[in-house]
Image (cartoon, rainbow, N blue to C red; front, side, top):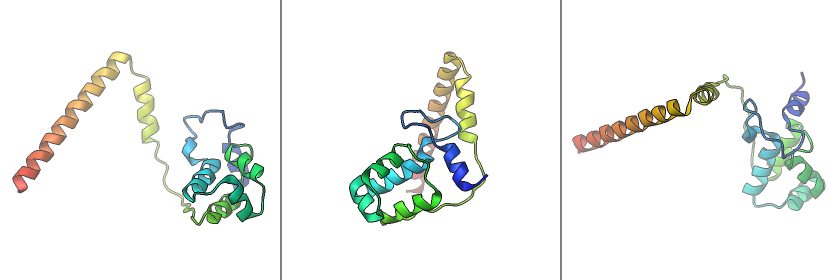
Length: 136
């Protein structure tokens, strides 16, 4: 599968469609472009002028109406005087696994789990305070 096909497969049909648990919304190309533009303090029209396209094309892209290539996303991010660092890393589903485990619990089990975690946090805080006072 090409990168363009893979990117297209990850894009939602519309911006209103919620992200699935297997596709975190914060990693979508449209969000990267929107975030870069906002960090640069640019309007859609200003970004369009910098890249030789139209404001409506930028709006469609940011709203998930198009599936841009990685090359296009990189060009738009760079037009915002930012860069995009892409790397391959080992997949870590620990957060999704934990969320699924908690979702499978009954409300009573969730309360007991949160109480246990709260007790542990209090113990950690006390241990840290003892460490600071002992080191002084």
